[in-house]
Image (cartoon, rainbow, N blue to C red):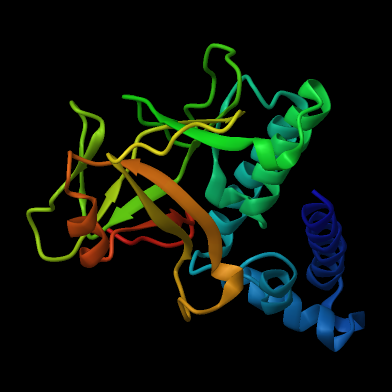
Length: 239
């Protein structure tokens, strides 16, 4: 939230500078005029992207996306159990899981080593504009895309992909902390990465591992295929 507050403050200051340059260009500073030129060309100022997040969007689309991100963060803070959230809209996705664990520890008094996150797949898909849902325990997340595997919407499990390489959107996932449970043999623990990637070795790109249901005795096949989950930022398109 603090990072978005800084970004919003920067945008507001710069818009005032640009307004001054538009209204009185003859008496405006050169950096104000340069800023106004960038904005009128429908481009995102580079220092906005540096303070915020990388993007390939035009200025108009970037501003709309920023409003959606801020709305997501505010809703997550105020009503974490009443909405579907795009995990890719957060600067630090891992922080959300830490928050869930911390809340569960405070409520149950259980030690952290005796708690795990449960990921339950639903049959519903969501977009940024489809956010309300019945209140249940945990947080409902979307924004995941699957690589090197396909998703079976009937069995709610992985299946071997038909094409050589493609990305496939996953349905909403309900995430909630629970006491430890035995790891069934029908689960694949796949890495979760942030896309797009400059390098898969960058630790900032690694969010964690995610338990994906797989058909009996096929987890090794998906591991060898390099099955991976990506958090798909709305500023980019994988598909």
